[in-house]
Length: 394
Image 1 (cartoon, one colour):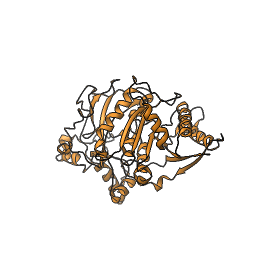
Image 2: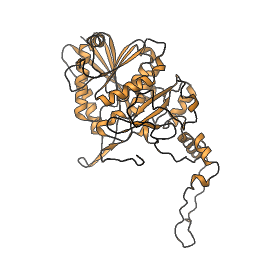
Image 3: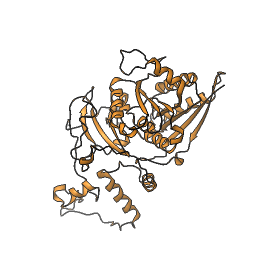
C-alpha cells in the first residue's frame, strides 16, 4: 500500500489532487480493496471567507496547502523580479539546477508546513488506520491532525466525507467532484426554497450534496446504485448527523437504478424502498437534484428517461437542478478539442424542452454561476454550470 497503482482508465477528481495530507487519512479498505479516505470541508458562513474562496478558490481549508496558495498570491501581487539572462553554471560549465533542500536540512520548515506558512511542505503518505469495512464511527480518527483534540466535538460548519481517490471510471461516484460543490453552494444560498421540502438526489455518489440539502429539507432521498457505494453514502450521513441534530430533517439512502423501470421494493435487497416511501416520494417530492452525473452518453440517456418518468408521476409541481462540468478533450476522431459528453447533455436538455406529450411541459434555463455565492473552497472554473428544469403539468 506504500505506492499507488494507477490503471490506464484511472480517473482522479481535481478536488483530490492535493490529497492525502495530515487531515485526509486513509481509514480503511472498502469491499473492492480500494483505499478509503475521510476529508473535512468547511462551510464558509462569513462573507469575507466566501469572497476569499471565490478568488483563491482551489484549496481545502486548514490544510498545509493553504499557506502555499497564499504565498503564490502574494508573489503575484509583488513587483516582478529581475530576470538574469545568464543561466547559472556549475564549475564544469553544466547548467546548475537548484533543488529544494530536504526538510530536515531546513530549520523551522517542518513547523511552517504544519501551520500552512511558508513554501515548505511536509512529506506525507497515506496512513492505514483500519484495514476492514468497519463502521463510520470507528476508524475515522486523525491522530496526526493538530486539531485532533477537537475531533470528537462535531462542528456545525464542518462536513466530513468518506471517499476514494483515483478510481476506475465505473467508480467515479466514490470521489467528490466540483459539480457537487456548485450544487451545494446553490442549496446553501437558497435555503428558503429547500426548507421543509422533500428532495430526491439522483446519482448521489458520496452523498455530500444530500448532506447539505438535509440542513434545510425535511426529507432527502439519497439515491444511487451499488451496495458498496450506498454503504459509503450511509456512513457519510452518519458522520454528519450532527448537522440536523434537534431537527426532524432526515436523509434516507435508497437504491435507484436509472436503467430499471421501477423502484426496488424487494425487502431482501439492501437499501430497498418501502411501499410507504414510494408513496411519499410521489406525493411530496418537489425538488430533484443531480451533481456531475453526465459523463457517459448511455447513462445520460437513462438519467433523462428517469427524470421524465419521475416528474410525470409526482403530485406536486417540481424543479430539477443539474450541475455539470464541461470537460474539454482533444479527440483523434475530430482532430480538435471537443466535449462530447457535454454536447450530448445539452442535446438531451433541448429534447426535453421541446417535448410535447400533452401531459407535461418542461422549461429549461441556465442558472448563472456568478450569481451563486461560494460556501466551499474549491476552484470555481468557468466550465462549471447549473441548469434548472421546471416540470409543468398540464
